[in-house]
Image (cartoon, rainbow, N blue to C red; front, side):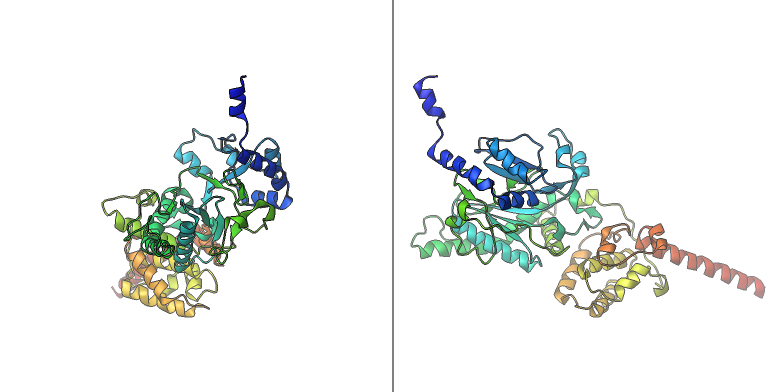
Length: 444
């Protein structure tokens, strides 16, 4: 090897600095645990100085695997947004159905990409405000390690079904729709605030008259199957900074020096979210997408939904309402939003008139220990009537047990509340016809 070649392969000063940090930093047990705890059910792949990723699929079996990879030259770790039954069963040649069967869920990961940290801060603040407006109070926030931020909405926050479509099956379609919806909802405020920021600094070089080139304005990276993002507390090779977790209150004053790996204090990136709290966000995003693309006669949602023939039960008898529905109608302590979803689909499926449906729903809400906001109920009713009728979830779904409603054995035999009331009504009508026939025979 000649002198020129030796010089070419010599590590740069930055690379030397990163490598000197990795052993010291990743030897910390709390750092190893933070990465490992977040990695559950995820594909986790090490990176080697950004030159190449490790073999895929891969996952962490023990916290010590983090340091084990570092000893082999790993400098950072990257995780999947998708959650898998067994990440090691993944393979490059898998088709969509195989991946769907292996996937148990997905987190919504909003990856802010920007050339300027201050612009990324503004975008992150706006996104968090939008999420909270739609009822998502618990979000995770972390520094990307360079000039952006990652915001996470956990899988637990999403409804497990929408109109009988499994949410876990709708990756990457639904996360992409939500990402585009948030981008559209934020664009006016984002341009305004970025423009104001550049005006304060005395330079309108990058943003002027509400027209900003894409290469300057912060953007959200769209997800794709098996997409990876930097794990919390992983180092970033180009900056030698850690991907530290922040609270929303810390965002405004955050500076890169706060991500110094030698000063890192570990926090949990995954928030303690409320089950189903992102249901409104998802439905609003799907409704927005439907309005944006009226030419789509059949979306993926429609393709995957079960065919259902609407019915109309005349002279609805309260006696034959399913026990689980009766229990919900008495009022709820927890799970009110999911209970509302069940009631709307049930009453629409049996053909109750809209005015009567609304009356029942609002009366039910008054019986709840803490009533839902009327504006929320109104929005859900409007959203429901904009879509075709589908039955409520089957009894074997988590919707019922998750809100403290335990279906009876008889209900489980009928599988669905709509089947239950149809059978009970049919049986009553049959008895009435037989009774009427006997009476007519006696009279004759």
